[in-house]
Length: 256
Image 1 (cartoon, rainbow, N blue to C red):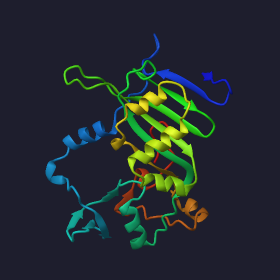
Image 2: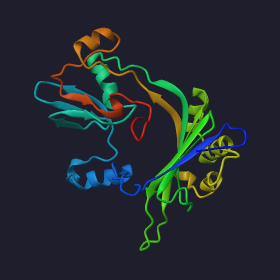
Image 3: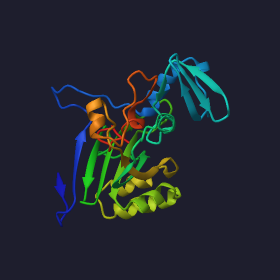
Image 4: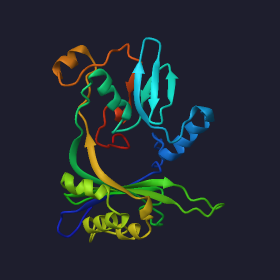
């Protein structure tokens, strides 16, 4: 861990490779690769691209899923795994008087991108840098491939304390503005930070506010303690999971 001359910035690096005699305990797989693996295991006719849930009607035998184009799909169960702004969760609130709880802004804007810069701090490992207001970490994303000529790629993520209005504006801003924001908040940082951004495809970058939501009740006793949030019947055929149920601030790849 190194401090700059003023002592207000620190950085550290950690190798992806286990030290001699130490066992690897986890495996980092890009979510796109996981999606492709899952996609290949599902019959193509089961997938509806471009479909949006409008509402659903639940009965004792199943669920009628109503799409925005008017189509109705009959299902045994409906699982809302559709993210922090879940359509299933929203429809549940309208259909079952489920007060879903407001999203809470966490005071942080998040910017994420990918770089193909080759540097010792990025090759097979990553690093963290913090300055009291901003924090960045990197991690290996894609290995180099000699056959296709694909370079090694690393993911970087910068989190900055800003007000909600600025964070929301950043989410809708052109990628050139996101780049300016990132460069502004990392000005003067150690190498290879600036060079990483020179080797970033900014059209693939993402930026926006960070949210979480109060944990939904999981029992009758819990529901009494949270009267503003209804407890859905355990016999229901509709359920939300992941960020649709309970978005949390990110930690080691978990959260929204």
